[in-house]
Image 1 (tube, rainbow, N blue to C red):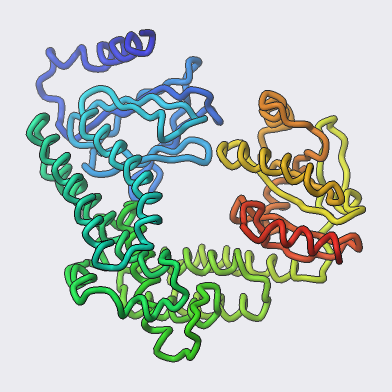
Image 2: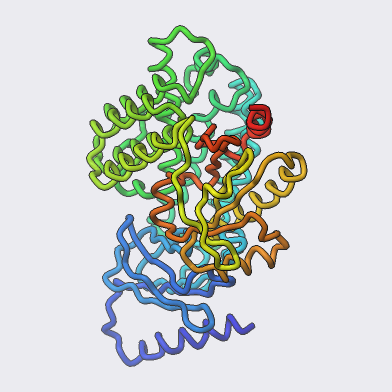
Length: 473
């Protein structure tokens, strides 16, 4: 009830004068909301990767902001490490409410423009559920799989038409809603060879019906309108990965596909460079696949080769500089090297060096308050591993710069022991030095303080096998 009183008061304050002034321009919109369990005291609003403003939350964790000279379309609001999008058109007054502990699922819109945005967020959540269903369906033969996808698409189209009939729509909303349906459908087709259990991916590609990928001839690979849009970018990533299979198969004799191979990844960068002309879309795809390769690689020579290919094709100097630095850090953490002597702080506020903690086979994991799901799931997983592998020292480091008390409180509130929990003294420097990306990154070190694997992942199906190897080394 309090929240709706807030909405009423806010609207009266901002819109009460409209009756007395009929000359207010249409090119504006309001966005506001309330954030439960905030990670920071601000929200960042942006459009097309350009920041509009950083808006502070008030004492009740709420805000209201007017966007003048509105360019209708999709806007992004970020809080902590999470973000979501909102569709804004002239005279919209959209407010939202969310809980950071369940960011997307708790998000609800109210106000003028709420119906279309609630439709879009619900469609997003349904698509996430559909992904799990698609993984199971991918084991079917191609023709049967396509029938299931067609049924899912028809169901979405029916819901979309019912929404339009009940609430009406605008041309912009229709464009986005239909793109959501189509690009989700296309993506599900593009992932089929990868998720199908068969190891010979080239053979799987040859088994699909002739019209299975017929939609490709109508795809705009340089669509500036959707260039920052999740579904479009997800489709492009799946699409170029899939088409690179054919390119790769043309000069390899291996029937068993390895998506981590240098050759395949170089082929994919080559295809992106030849297929896409828009500089931003091309640079984003090149960056995405390059950093994905690097974050899983343990070979300095391969890292240098992929970086060389990337820098020759990308026009984004900022990203080139970042990935060059990232590659250098990764290569310095190669197998057999020693861990840099990073400075830590324990939860008693005492400083220490990271290498003083390595006196047995050791696993080092990282977490952030802004990635709540990973924080919770990784700590639960680590508690299980500690029980199974007492020979290994499991160290966990918080990467945030919010200070000790906030992360300490979060750990204690979830019942997690502070033993072997630390925080970086200088987070930015430490993250660069240890090349911490993605957040699941885990470093394995033997009893001689030599790095065994700097790109492990505690959620990998191979992780426990790696732990056993570490113990027996």
